[in-house]
Length: 150
Image: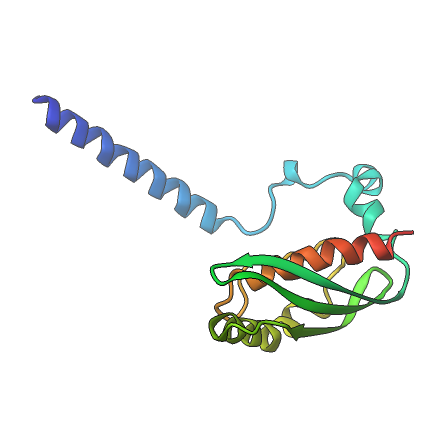
């Protein structure tokens, strides 16, 4: 077999194997039994401890992030009860028209993604087409976790 044909064959086999693995992953719903900690392990895990270690209250801060237009920020206020977020308010601070458009979209779309979530588990990556504003939200989220920690 010529060298180029051999390389092409290896690449095709690699793609087929990757596709088979992806299909297997998509067919699997939920964690595998070996990935689920026992109740004793879950009780002592940092996530379980963190979820129970937040004070109820209203917490506010500003989240910052870098955008092509420069540094941007959003104001975030979260109400926490029993470790869960029961209300969220986000104020867009951008003056750059493009950043303002993305922040406004984020403000509109984030509420339904935030309310009802555990403070310890929440992290946003893309909301209403905005992929940078969530970085500011996550920055604010880290500060709110610190403020709310027992």
